[in-house]
View 1 (cartoon, rainbow, N blue to C red):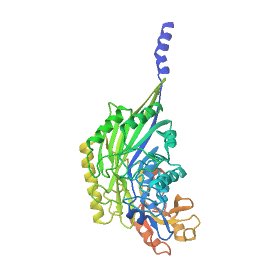
View 2: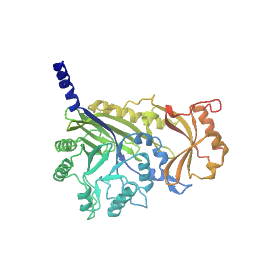
View 3: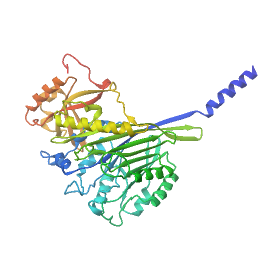
View 4: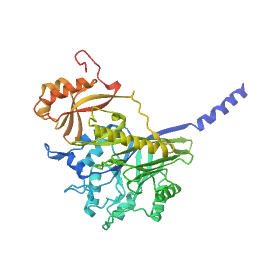
Length: 454
């Protein structure tokens, strides 16, 4: 009997010592966030006399917010008026506010447009992002700020990450002292990577602004730099600047992933290959076994997005709009979207390594319809005192302090939604109302009844 107890103790003991604790973090990376003249003009609300980006990010925002941590490339300045697109960008602050509301946690700012508005633009961009409490890195007011904040440490869900960011140049515009823009300098990069390793974080991520514009394959310099970054300890290397998609490679044996270019996230560029991009989903897994902690990439997938231009720019995630003929009505627009999808899948299917397109579980989410009324305050009499809107039911999404995008109804059937739209447009003040898709968890949808058949 004693021997049996001893044997059981020996067998059970290792299970206690080597118990594992596993945590996970979902990361979302987006490519070039730009504002050309056409984007800026389309975002201006003439009725409110202010810029409004809610419609542009309406469908992409729920996806971004579903990630634990979302990081994008802010390829412009927030230098204030006059607002301008190419070649020297300055976007309205409303864009940054909408990026924050849409779910972006971190923006990288080292790119070839960092000093488009010289010192004022660089420093004001930093001030605006700081005021919104959006983490950022890549540009700095001075060397002291860089020493104290770089590499940027990001903490989320029990993970600690180091983020670095570099650009190949600034379009020939010199950086005004004491400002700093992180340039691709291999000597400096090695010093920064050593500092990142000393931070003892769970993973090192490097966001690079590199490559040749409009080229679908990485050049030799990109490949050489990626190898250097991996040798220096990077786990993820994310690329931007070409404005078109380039391949993604996940080396599972070495636990390293490089994306050479995510293409345009949002921009005014309309030529083939440039009117969309991909979001990269990366799941990190951290396993703590006794005193040993290891972090590894457990999943890597991409998701395609396309930007539609009509009277306004609207981001169309393909998970909701592929083959759509209701919201993408014009044949030219549908053809352009289809061509972007075809080109992108052909490129990434052929050249990607271990990074496939994300499979969307449609049974988790349900697409329903609503009528987008527009942007109003919470107490606006147009909204509060219209009996028809009260009949359909109202919902709102805040995107500026005290300013809301309002929706009426929640319709399961498109035909009924279109009837409601026509009825609402006949009311004073709502002639610009339009149909909208809304994404709802099936379990949260209101129950149907005889009095609420839609």
